[in-house]
Length: 85
Image (tube, rainbow, N blue to C red; front, side, top):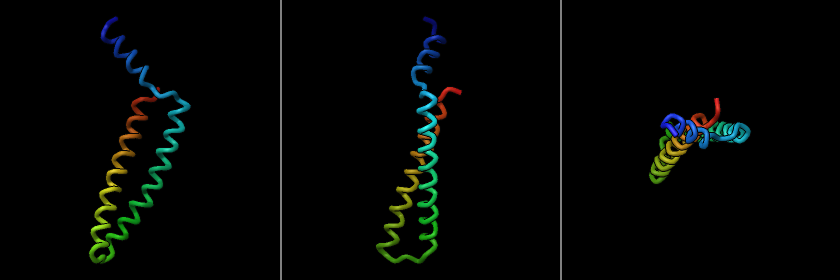
């Protein structure tokens, strides 16, 4: 088997079935919407003059939010790359 046919076989073996991909996309979209509420709330809290330890908690929240946003972006990219076009 040539390298190009091996690459094609490997790629198609990794493809997410369209029906499943649609459901995962829907869930990723819903997750994005939920994260947007958290991001906006975090932003609004950052506008308040919080005292310790609340300001530390806000930094922890922002760190978690950024990680969740990155993971959601990775998930959406993976789905896009592994779904038949």
